[in-house]
Image (cartoon, rainbow, N blue to C red):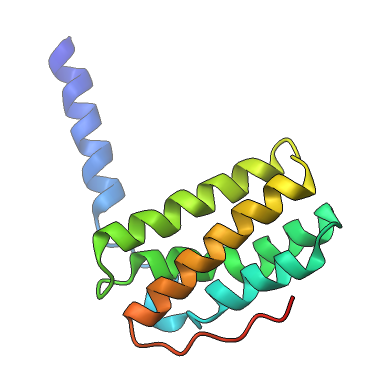
Length: 130
């Protein structure tokens, strides 16, 4: 009986990992505007103290670009991890909503991490007017 569970697990894994015929909905880092990682975070900072507006700016403008930036193969793994860690702090601030002061500090750290990662890739960092 245990071998049937193992066989079923392996079969599901092979199906999940096999190439499908449907087009991919994931974005590669090259298909994203990586500068949105910085400019989107900046928009979230500017939206403060309006927490719902900051969350919208982060989610709609920065989120996917931050993932794309962290996934860029040219970026050092330590720098990628830093972007993702800072991103996790910001996301945690939204659920449940923390105060604007804590969110502002975490967004500033994320913005610094994203800017450093962009510079490491040779990408010009957009100015953030706060």
